[in-house]
Image 1: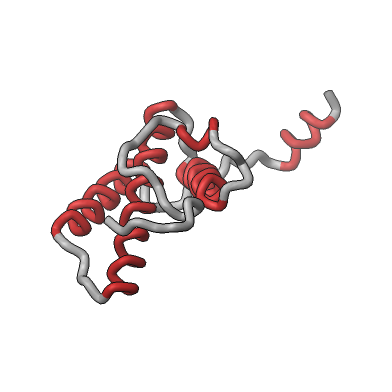
Image 2: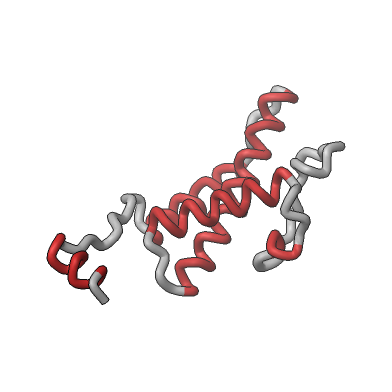
Length: 118
């Protein structure tokens, strides 16, 4: 795994649940993690803790994959078997979450107007 001098792009190899919540929100990596988690929650319609847990894992694995890709591009070293395992794991998580974007529930105009009158 690459070692970066800039702590804003280096991520821990150990998963700590929701570690970004206690981190400084100005950090580039924390902002990106939050953005990705929120986007996946919205796109998958994650309506349960179980799905949110899977989303956290998916984002963590995706960041590991991207870090390995950057390292490979910088150093000319092709990714190894760990890379393939991470990609397969990410694929499995995304299948569980649903690869299709979930459409939010819509209501008809009469129901909307009835709700607005309350």
